[in-house]
Image (cartoon, rainbow, N blue to C red; front, side):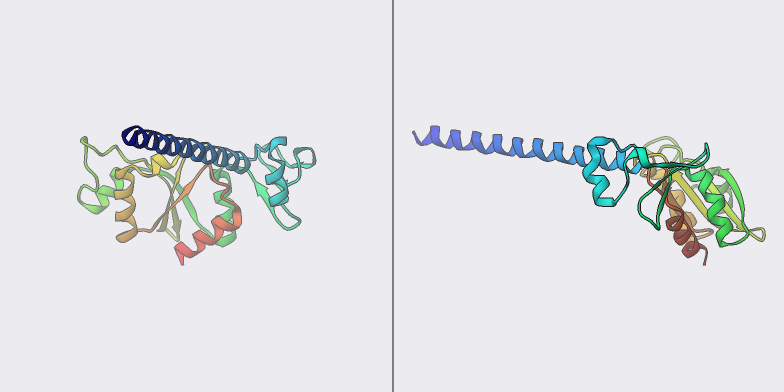
Length: 196
């Protein structure tokens, strides 16, 4: 009987661990799905609990502005701007000062400035993404900004190598994610800090 008891205990423990993992995975997926919906402005009636906790009115009281942006009030002092990052960036830079923006800077041009290879070709490294924006003030480059569509794209080793070089040697680089809210105040605060 001792052998069967041990076998039964072992089986019950394994079943309990599997059940706990399944529940944890389901809760994790549900939370992230709900948060992603909320961040993207796609809140539905099933998300009333979230709406109440962040004080966002239901969609029937949302105020529409122009065809390029929709604003949903979060509180009396705050508003959510769901425009893409590319449309917000000029507004933020205009609040800070006079800057020029250059888009899609190739990693090869950064390597040419460095004078040596910053990432491996072939092998385990993928090609790095072009740098989304270079910000210039009085003709001098003061900041690189990368905007990623996904975290997986951000973590590619070649992208990290280019960022490390820029942060340490020529121009600081900051990263934003398109799927995040990127509110104007948040963008302004980070950019001001990076260029000061």
